[in-house]
Length: 238
Image (cartoon, rainbow, N blue to C red; front, side):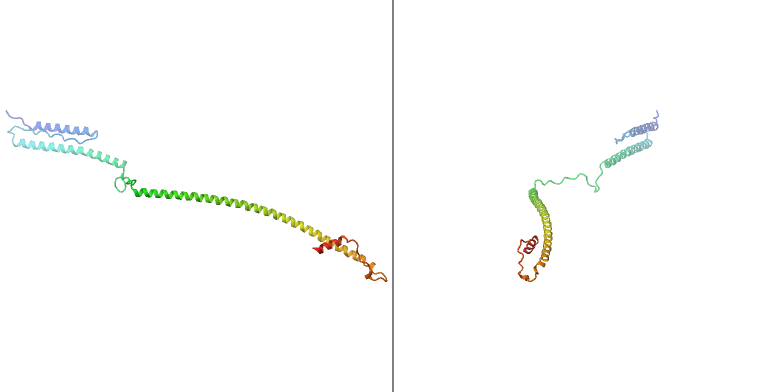
């Protein structure tokens, strides 16, 4: 009996497998695609031994078609995967931007030199120097306070002396005024005494020129001195 032609059933099986691959790709595109193993290549159809060259050509066509489908599937799968990966990389770069110099932002901490004897000695010397400076500052503050107290005492003393000098000046001014008033009174009394003396001399002159009696024989006035004469004597004694 004649053998059935292997062409039509093989083409139908190839179309069915390609439809299944496309449907599977569409389903995978609905969620995050992940690269998976390529779909298995359809098993080559082995026709009867008497198929000849036609069977060889049909098998090569089927193989080429299957390889083309596998390549298309890989391209379709790798495209979304690359876009998702690129989006993830961009999001990570935005969340943690790199420094301007392009180096890692994490810097190593400076090496600790706590165990270095030179650094410990320098720190101790610095602390000693600071302690000495603080002590000198305290001494200077104490000296300044003592000078301030001395200046305050001198100021109070000078104020007291100035007040005493002012009071003494006032008393001297009052005494000077009193003495000036007394001098004016004495001067007025002297003038009065001189006027009285002149009046007495004028009154005693007519009695001294009597007829036949020399003026030298007149007895001098030996009576009690008047007030004007006393004032004149006091003025002469001064």
